[in-house]
Length: 283
Image (cartoon, rainbow, N blue to C red):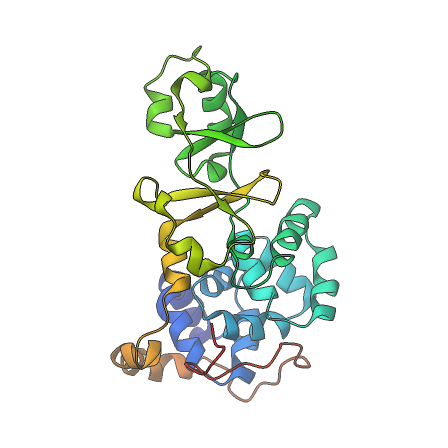
């Protein structure tokens, strides 16, 4: 491996945010081959920070097996946001290569129109019945720690949300106490088909930094965080990222541009058209 390739990989691993912004400025024909030459974990680290339109182009121009390896390292909501911008036949080719549970989660997110709460819902939540004990809940938290998100939802037999228990309250409660006795009643939730602009104004944010998301019948699908809704609902300011990152780009560009294979050709373009940054319809 060339020394410059080693340096490039190290840069991406230690500065994924900076790398994402710089790769966005590179020619699209160079971005996908560069990312495909990294480890799946490094590629995932960049893609989760990258402009979704550029990320979708890269996803659609990497090999299906490599893309599948990267998708397994992304949150389902991030993976769905990228795949939503690719052609249907590409998604149909890719989803069967993913683990069944992940493919089902991503497919559920893709079933909701873009711009709705359901399209950005994190399905990885921990939900237990009210008669489960605090000790049992803590065992589930340790086992499924990535799904806990600092709280556990309490649901009835129909999977309707009844309350929420923060991890701090769990740790401070007696192990034999039922969750129904220590939960905080959940009086606010979002529906999956609500528009993001509507969800951003929900009064529940005054009390909670995350709200559960339910389908039309009230069944819990997952949750979204307030900061996530705010970011998605806020239009970019004048000049966008490019203007804000000019200084950073000038600092790193000469080095990183020498690592990118500018003349490389990618696979046949399977991504949907990419609107110019700041153009109407651009996310």
